[in-house]
Image (cartoon, rainbow, N blue to C red; front, side, top):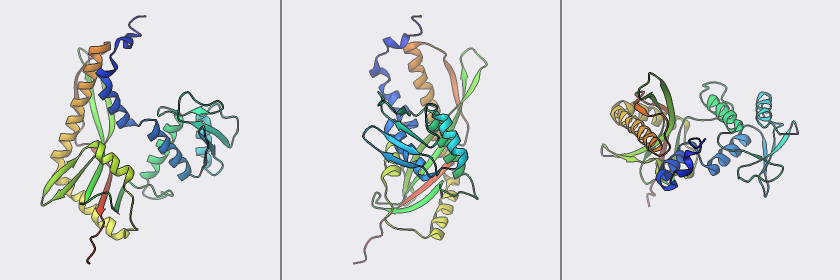
Length: 273
């Protein structure tokens, strides 16, 4: 029984950085709240915020999604409405929605699946975009990778696959590439506001040019994936030292990493006068 609660002896400071990186990778409560409320409204639900949380009316959602969401929200007493909150302790009468809740899983699955549809993408969910914004001084490209690692256990033939989504970015000036780390890329993706509509034809041209340039960036992409694999083993080794459990022998990245999204941010044109 004592081994079950081995984490009681763990110094929180020893794994603080690892926990922060987990939040960065899969979202803290504020990110979950922002995603869920935006996605529900995008898909047709009425989202009404109050002091304690949100009232969700699902009548205008696609029928199959209504069923999926109300099934995920098992305690919902109404077939058209439920109350949710993203804080704990959860207010009475509301259901707590964390990042591991089936509602979030259902929303993620539906949104991502729709984004991959070449035809019938009724919500205009884009894996690529080009905007002009005040948030950058130079052309900046953000790339969302899916990084996969084959993990092998010590003294065992067991293998498993670990996946993560990793956001990275860069600027280029005079053929000199400057990397943008996860935090800065995340801030730009969340806060950059388009200044005006950008012609679709010009967007397509810029995206195609950028995708072609990836051929010259393969080594950089592979280096990123390798670094993420090393971090996975390092983090697990720290947990192993603190609380025991299985050990990794190695983590082998599946190369090259998959490019899931490309977002180009352009600076506002300079005034001529």
